[in-house]
Length: 253
Image 1: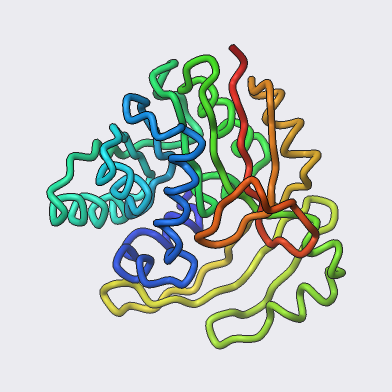
Image 2 (image 1 turned 90 degrees about the horizontal axis):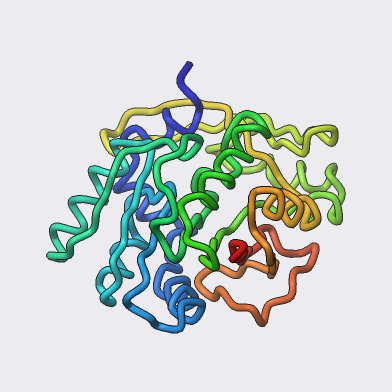
């Protein structure tokens, strides 16, 4: 069965690159460089790389990057952009819920909700984390962003739903307190000008859940911060006002 995110990203690359939440690439890559101490010998895996905005910028700065995504449409756009910039980036079509690499990378990225937490079951979301850990060498880092469950809880689910129901592109929105899953009916126009209506299904996590999941997946140290668009930093303490968390996890040595 086709998942909602497969429908969304089938032909959405150019439109995706214009979204407001994709405009912080430079500052986000600055953060990656700080975490890697600007060591260009380190190999980077961009999981669910989308149109390759982080992978291409890292390649521009001299890093060796492999990016993979489930969507051939997103990858097509990524390859076009890399070719225009005359940069060599290894873009591959792969499914993040399946194993592909074994201790080949020094860092893995999963930004802008990449594969995690878009999967339709907790088991699949956990598989994304375990395969990310397997792809890393001992001591390697996973850098990711994900939805912060403290946000809807702190602001009350009632107010959270009310604040998100406005806007012509969005219809019914629900948040299940038993599963921490948000479902939103949304209508979008793809790159060909065709209109589609889908119902998204995204999983919010508490900081404690994220730490436990990552430690269970094979990471020894997990740090969690507030996620600020284009300004990723360890200086931003996580608060209930942060819609997303910025997570840095280091694999066991």
